[in-house]
Image 1: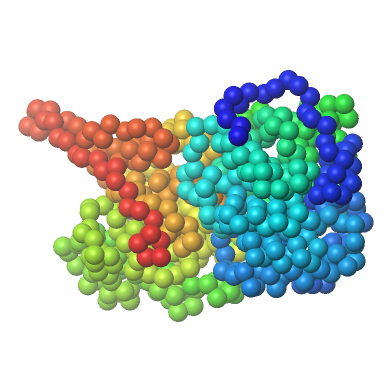
Image 2: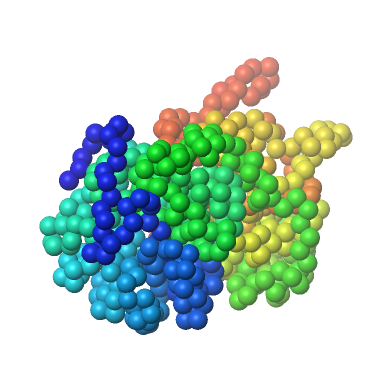
Length: 614
């Protein structure tokens, strides 16, 4: 097994084998693997090749364009509807048989982590098992050995199939990948898998964030110099989209640049999720595996990994994922729901003066765009609950939401508990202390989630007046954002620099996301969710929408100081910096004397709700 010593060798990459899975292949260029997804919910083509006719047309087009392999998959890689082995086999196995009938010499790969599906597919003609989930089924490699076919050895960092791990960290991602994939390749060889039928795949985006993906791309030569042929799936990957700040359908140029870099380092095969005159498959075939000699060194493209890493990703993101003048109608959004349900939650603590007014702006949406409207009361001792009920909301206290756990103080606790008290596929949070809120707040927050692709968290932004005595500063609010949150994000997570209101209390998210991340305590909850979404799903999963003007009661500086302390603790923890846990000491002036006053900080998150309510 390969251990440690992860440096970039200066030796040229090894010469490629003239065969793959026993069949002759080109040695003067990289190989193209055409991806054909037999799924209705593929991350890229959204089901375009789900039907037999469309899928076979895609195979025919790939063969005509010179693809060396076709890869057939029956299950979406990411979270989604459950697909059992029987359904996966139904989608994949007969189709493999038909491809083999039409193209006797074509190399056919089947993308599955299940040994029984692989066995059936091989029986119908598959040459290669593309195991993108790193041996989740330990029998898979034994099937390859028994039946004499190939296998792709991948790395997921221990992630289970169809999950997106949260805040993945590696001391050295390249070393981790090398240990796992080389060890798996050697075990496959020992079991009897033909050596020319084993590939290694660092598996970008699987159990890795964007920085891991860029590091693996930068050091591809280290993978190549293990001697095992490297398959590198780069086409339209999230790490490319997040690096460049572009949407899923705008990743062609980034894919080509990444492919050129990988080919320059000696990667052997590139899966391609697109076809047509502008497809990477037409261009991959021109990438010689010895790119410096072939004239396709990445420098010739005018872009290097360093250029990509140092680009202003957040600015590209802001252009693509900001809705500054939202114009969805409620009718359009209702049509876009397509069976999805919406919950609106108002966290409230002693908000008797404003809660009814907020509810009145949302109540007309109840029963059409909004399926449930809940006020989650955090222990109010005034008339908040009574006025909320009278205004038409369902009121649940924090103890009722999760009765088996004693509540702790703070906003984060209430928002976390609200996930157990509601069941909408989408959840919108609206603060209960708003003054004259706009009825468009909820529709506009839901717009990107209902009409966009890949958005899981939408933050509202707005102009925030600050009332000082009888005067008003038209945009003087957001003091904690400007003095604490924004500078810290710039220093520690610069990709989030273009999020206009990182601490804003009006936002919406998918239940899939919200139940899968921990909730920070107190006023750290908003920044915690933003950072967790970025770490888990990437910048492209975040959107922001203009809500116009937001007025609420302004807090005195001592309260803002305590709020800031909690936010600092949350940011540091999410960014891997140890917080002292010390309380905040302030010195209010009392009768001419500065008197110390301490406020404790809580660093204890609530766990993801799906671990408590699966």
